[in-house]
Each structure stands twice: as structure tokens, then as C-alpha cells.
Length: 248
Image 1: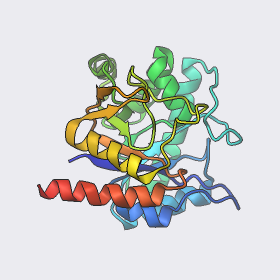
Image 2: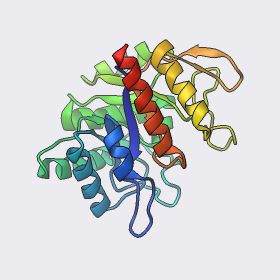
Image 3: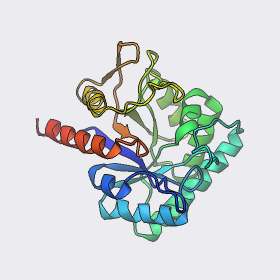
Image 4: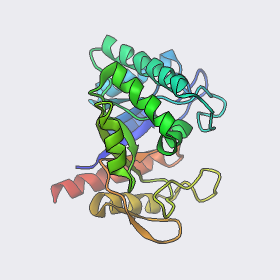
């Protein structure tokens, strides 16, 4: 069954983002910010505790060191810098999880680091090396793409397995990539459209692109962004839809 994941734990100090306490009970996997692109020690700890409370798999969500840009601005980092950055964040989150009797179950890079991972072999290698150095049994989440076998082969060189992800609330280009956030149509805000795309991914393994074409999008996990204004309603609707599909 397709898993449902959401980016959570992205508040910072007095600044609050998302509705984590309401979303967490509805999802299977929580991509938890590790204190670099967003979050702080207290938020990180509380989000891990919330995931444990609701028996949600804990995922490390490392990003670029750019709180002002919410980790969505590209940064020119060398492979070794990416390696250290991801290792640092993964160790921080896993340490907090272990202090509460849990552990990180997978790694999904955030924002611009996620996009760089998909486009740049050096960035991808830095991420895979960091995960392998910490715990090679941790899967890495990557965007579902036609190049999935090449990505699997690269990951296998580091003894890493992959989980492929599709997005319910993001628009796709014909090449299978996500429409850039600078485009006004990059994010789906209408609940009906989000649910339609989620159903298409869950039942047919495909999505309709921004130009109207249908492309294959086989995925292991489905993401709804926690910072989307309609996130809670979308997660509720998708959870209900996935439950109905599981019943046959």
C-alpha cells in the first residue's frame, strides 16, 4: 500500500508553521526538519515525541543551512560539504529519537537539496555517502523518475536502498520533474486537484503534467507538504481515499 508522508517539525522559535499535532495521526511517515533549514532543538524534540506517540515512522529531513530562505534556495556546496551537512543533521535527529526509545527510519532531503540531489551527481553522492557512513540500512527517498534504475544502481554502490516518492500537491513537467516553485502553478492548492492527483498515483502510478500529458509515476510513498495552507484537509482526504483503496 502506498505510504503517506508529510514534512513536519518546521516551526522555529516563536514562529509556527503547519498543524503538526493534527496532521501527525493521519500519516505513515514524518519527514522531520533537523534544525538547519528550519526547526530548533525544542521543536525537533517535540516533533519526534509526537511521531512516537502516533507510531509514525521518523524520517530525517536534512536541508541547506538557510533558515531565511527555508532551504529552498540553491547553494553551491562541494561533495564533502554536503556529506558533512547531511551526516550532522542525521546524527542530531537520530540521537534525539534514540533518547526516546526510537530511531530514524529513512532519509529524505529537503527543498533545494532534494532538487540538487536529483540533478547533480556530486550532491547525490555526498548524500548517499553520509547515509552509508551513519547507517547503510537507512533508505533514501528520491523523486520517482524514469531514471529509477540508474539511481538504484548508484545507491547500491553505497549499499543504500531507495524509496521513490511522488507528490500530491506539486505540478509536474513532461520530463517527470517538479514545476519550479517560482511558477504560479507549481503548487496545487485546490483540494479536488490534490486528491485527483493522489488517486491517480495510487491507482494508476501516473500523473497528469502541467501541459496535460499523462506520465508514469510509480511510487512507494506519497508526499503532501506541511507548509501548504490546505495540508490538513488534503491529508485527511488522501488518508480516507487510501484506506478505501486498501479495503478493495
